[in-house]
Length: 137
Image (cartoon, rainbow, N blue to C red):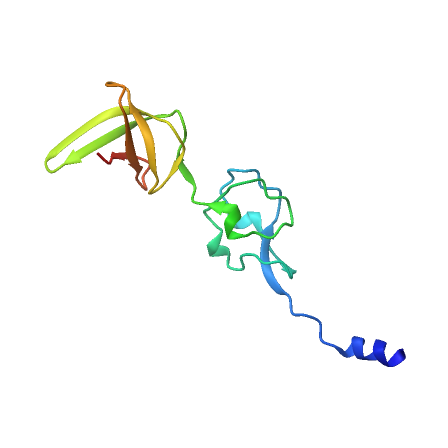
């Protein structure tokens, strides 16, 4: 029995890699900054490079000490539901700008539904990186 305890003491422990964890409780919708991250040793999978998390937004509340995983993060929402934004329709030299109410949230590159406030028609629009809306029809 002693030799078994001796062998277990000599056996190498499984290597644990440093992963990123929440330095504080991050409510859903929080945009991650460097101050929100800390490195922890652990055997649970998670992101290890801060550049993979900084600037992204949390999908759910992440409690302090929980390792960050890519599935918990998303691109930050630039457009909120029920906001009024300029909607640009452009074809060739023709450019029309109208006010539209957003019907959902959207990040850069997302296609969302909006309602033209003048005609009350609902159309699709692409959220641009600057937060503007470009009609797809």
